[in-house]
Length: 372
Image: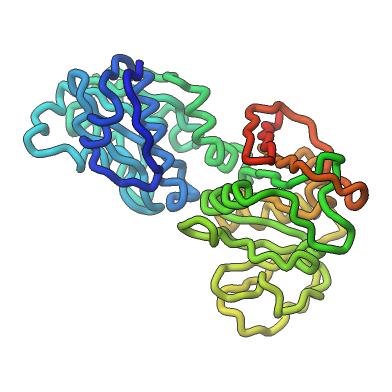
């Protein structure tokens, strides 16, 4: 159980030992250490795609002696960083320590060596795992490898939470497409905007949260009319970290190059039906050609998957959002209801799913849906 907890910002990279000593005065079971792994994993959300976010901590007799998380794609995994954080004076404790990890350790050579080899080499006695990895190259293989070498393995601790934490990766490897998040705001009387004009519905807090979300996902998609009427920048300028790949549908390539989506400080992908890709001087703008007359959304998703896009926010307009809903091509929906009436305009998309959370943000209500 947690005896005491102090507030902290996710961006505070305080020392492992300072954080643990100040936040948790008593940690008594597997679940609490796994929750710590979840907290650590979230720190890597901006840099590891298309890999999963993973956190790891090493515990000896009720004391965390090392911890780490996967920080950057292609670089050290969470387990490696956790072992590297162990102080010299504590290294002799490793053989009697328990390693906690939010996701099953990898057991094959990729960009880095297998983490199972690291655990075996240090003769760890016990490994506790939240979620098993659905990647066909692992899929329980990490657990088998550890047990083969005499290491006790416990799995399924807070498994549902662990699966949710790794949901983007699970969809990416399991369904071979990005994890798709639908995002929009609606008025109290069910409209998404006025016709033919830019319409702001939500307040400052909601807008800042949306920019935080952008830093966490790989790409953001809008349609032609949204790009033309709203002229959005689609960056996370109100937060920090990376901005997502901007993906814009422009079937006939009619959008003006003076629009914000062509500003060359953020990568942009224009998806078109036009086989004559124009010559341009935009360094960070790319084009992909698909057939808009058949299975348009499936083709868009496939283009992004081939570009190793693990997650996608679909932000508008209403027709595009409704298309994803009707095709049952979505995983999560984040819908703001603003305390404002429009009386007329473009109807908000209709969606059904499991509401997993409701949050009040000043005058706005955020409802988060999960596709059943």
